[in-house]
Image (cartoon, rainbow, N blue to C red; front, side, top):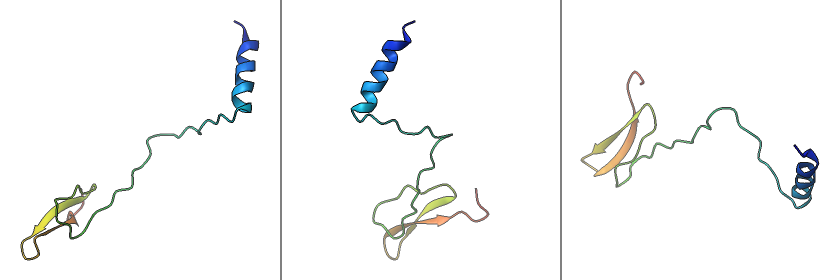
Length: 68
Protein backbone atom coordinates (compact mmCIF):
# COMPACT_ATOMS: atom_id res chain seq x y z
CA UNK A 1 0.00 0.00 0.00
CA UNK A 2 1.28 3.44 -0.88
CA UNK A 3 1.39 5.39 2.41
CA UNK A 4 3.26 8.29 0.84
CA UNK A 5 0.24 9.36 -1.21
CA UNK A 6 -1.96 9.31 1.91
CA UNK A 7 0.54 11.51 3.76
CA UNK A 8 0.59 14.04 0.92
CA UNK A 9 -3.23 14.19 0.89
CA UNK A 10 -3.31 14.60 4.67
CA UNK A 11 -0.75 17.42 4.49
CA UNK A 12 -2.79 19.18 1.78
CA UNK A 13 -5.97 18.83 3.85
CA UNK A 14 -4.29 20.29 6.95
CA UNK A 15 -2.80 23.19 4.98
CA UNK A 16 -6.18 24.05 3.48
CA UNK A 17 -7.71 24.53 6.95
CA UNK A 18 -9.48 21.20 7.25
CA UNK A 19 -10.26 20.44 10.90
CA UNK A 20 -11.52 17.29 12.54
CA UNK A 21 -13.76 17.50 15.57
CA UNK A 22 -12.65 15.42 18.56
CA UNK A 23 -14.41 12.12 19.09
CA UNK A 24 -16.82 12.01 22.02
CA UNK A 25 -17.20 8.97 24.18
CA UNK A 26 -20.83 7.93 24.27
CA UNK A 27 -23.92 9.86 23.26
CA UNK A 28 -24.18 13.54 24.05
CA UNK A 29 -26.75 14.52 26.63
CA UNK A 30 -29.41 16.77 25.14
CA UNK A 31 -30.56 19.76 27.11
CA UNK A 32 -34.16 19.12 28.05
CA UNK A 33 -36.31 22.06 28.95
CA UNK A 34 -39.54 21.58 30.83
CA UNK A 35 -41.77 24.47 29.76
CA UNK A 36 -44.24 26.01 32.17
CA UNK A 37 -47.57 27.61 31.25
CA UNK A 38 -47.61 27.20 27.47
CA UNK A 39 -50.66 27.11 25.20
CA UNK A 40 -49.77 23.86 23.34
CA UNK A 41 -49.07 20.50 25.00
CA UNK A 42 -45.27 20.35 25.52
CA UNK A 43 -42.90 17.42 25.20
CA UNK A 44 -41.60 16.97 28.72
CA UNK A 45 -38.24 15.53 29.64
CA UNK A 46 -37.60 12.31 31.58
CA UNK A 47 -39.19 12.32 35.01
CA UNK A 48 -41.82 14.90 34.03
CA UNK A 49 -45.36 14.79 32.67
CA UNK A 50 -47.61 17.33 30.93
CA UNK A 51 -50.55 18.65 32.97
CA UNK A 52 -53.36 20.84 31.67
CA UNK A 53 -54.66 23.57 33.98
CA UNK A 54 -58.33 24.18 33.25
CA UNK A 55 -58.45 27.51 35.10
CA UNK A 56 -55.77 29.14 32.92
CA UNK A 57 -56.09 26.86 29.85
CA UNK A 58 -52.31 26.38 29.82
CA UNK A 59 -49.99 23.32 29.91
CA UNK A 60 -47.07 22.77 32.30
CA UNK A 61 -44.44 20.06 32.79
CA UNK A 62 -44.50 18.74 36.34
CA UNK A 63 -42.11 16.34 38.06
CA UNK A 64 -43.42 12.79 38.53
CA UNK A 65 -43.78 12.14 42.27
CA UNK A 66 -41.31 9.45 43.28
CA UNK A 67 -39.41 9.82 40.03
CA UNK A 68 -39.29 7.55 37.04
